[in-house]
Amino acid sequence: MVSKSFWLSLVLSSAFLSAQTAPVVPVTGGSIRGSIISDGGAAFKGIPFACPPIGDLRWRDPQPVAPWQGIREATRFSAPCTQLSEKWNDYFVPKSAEDCLYLNVASPEWPPKAKYPVMVWIHGGSNTAGDGEDGGFDQRTIVHRGIVLVTINYRLGALGFLAHPELSRESPHHTSGNYGLLDQLAALRWVQSNIDKFGGDPGNVTLFGESAGAYDIGLLMTSPLSKSLFRRAIAESGAVSGFHSSRTKEHAEDLAQKLFVHLNAPSTGVIQYFRTLSPETILREMQIATDGDRIGLETSVDGWVLPESPAKVFAEGRSLPVPLLIGSNTLEIQGPVEPAEIRAEIRASYRDLADRALQLYHLSGDNLGTTDPIYGGPGIQWATDTGFRCPATEQSLGHSAASHSTYLYEFEHAQPGKQYTSHGSELNFLFGTWPSDAQLTPTDRKVSEQVQLYWTNFARTGDPNGEGLPLWPKFTNITQSYTAFTEAGAVTKSGMRRDFCDLWREAQIKK
Image 1: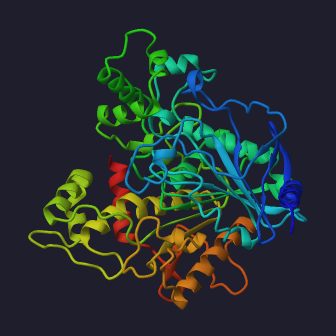
Image 2: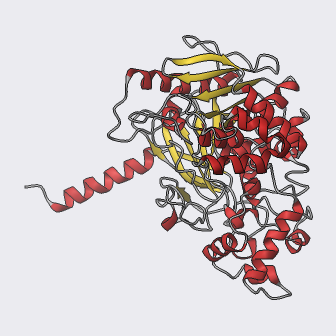
Image 3: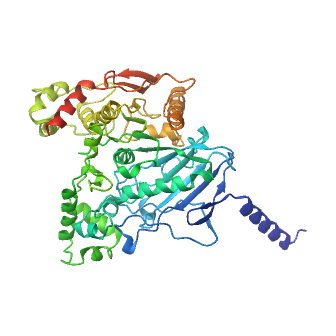
């Protein structure tokens, strides 16, 4: 009979050997220990890239990581940044916290024997929700294509974007707001300093993201603070010409003042007082006080991170000179349903151009609009055109006019079991995050493989094209070529909703 002491010795020995074989890497602040993955790679989770932004560090630039002693375990995701429920993010809300400035790194092989392209994922969620855990990290689909994947957290809502004169006086740059963007920049600087230890090439970093993540990438492409931090950009369903670009400094400060009045803040020491409130209270009361103002997805032209209107920078061809891959899905958001509501929104937005728009959407007179087999009914056409599709085309026009490589796409192919695309539906194809009951068709698998190859080819060389793939032509202001991911796979088209987007652009110029 084997003694208990033998089994105890065996367990302890196994634990010791596991600890010894687990990858240990020196990074800024100290050493971390990750996990070996069965596919031959490694994963490191919950790596701090800045000090926790709590107490007196709330609403300050991200501060350097405090060094630690010994080896820090990096096998679990950190807490998401504090957020309120928006239904889709209920998995993150209970475990969210203000101490959240961490990132995750996945390597394709361990130990690394080459320098791989790096892809840094910025999650979506309107800059009010989401988390770096929610980026296909554990699926490793992109990693298997030969890249190092990094996913990051950044401060959200009023905790990440509050602007106020008192905060500006505290700042060495005499500005406030955009702390969430500063977190993203701090994470990118961490990548530059550390990613080579994980097999990544710091000279070949692609920033990619969806929704608010894509929007923020567009913003960073207009920031002088981004210089040399990334070499390419992929923006999925988010463009700086949407969401009314970024708030003005005055508008952002006015919203903060509404919060302070709403909570009867003291006349002096208001920021000190607000640093004593719970993060959940600040987020909740800010929503109430500002009636859910979503202009600029919380961001503002602060004079430091964003020196001027991002939409204006792109329109004038002054965006960061990096290759850009950008696009949207055919049906992003529902929009109004009743014809009368759609007409009212069109008239309020397009003013003296409204009659032309109503004709395009087949809503003139008593017409009720028509349902397009690809783009849906008039309400969803209107919402997707003005919120996503036309802003992506506009961003492409400005970037391409400056002779920067630009590739535009549209995702038509719906998720398995669904009739239409929706906001974020391309992510399943990109990351392989299929529901357990998903029944994949051969077309699903084909489109998924094409998306993964195009994206990783682009990360590798700045050109999505490669062997075995249909040609994806560059976008130019004359041809306006783009790749559509259809029921037949990747197909080249041109002039995406051109009449609709030309009119949208004319309306923006007149505002």
